Image (tube, rainbow, N blue to C red; front, side, top):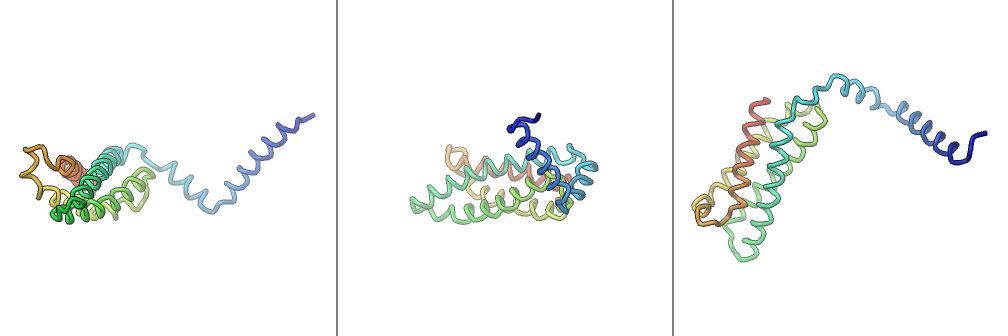
Length: 152
């Protein structure tokens, strides 16, 4: 005789299987998973992840400087926010091997170039140990732009 706990777990498992088979995306996702090349966007995922990491640090730095009254950081702050929106989308889609990646590559590369240019405006301060978050962000954006253009 089946014990209560076994019955519950078996029922849950069968229910989950039935739900997944009724999901209209199930066939689409399974077809794409079989055709997907998991290594196709590996480098792109690495560079977008690094761009996101350094971009978050750059935003924190910009906000600190803006709070001190340094309005020179406003453009940098805006460009980093734009870049982050697109690199986050790119990382998500590239991780899934989405068919939307090719359409987003050029736009992501442009946002990274724009962000790197805004961060580069603080370049004269890098050698003095200032705005190093901007330097890191600039370098990560340059690498991400290259990765996007390479895949495109």
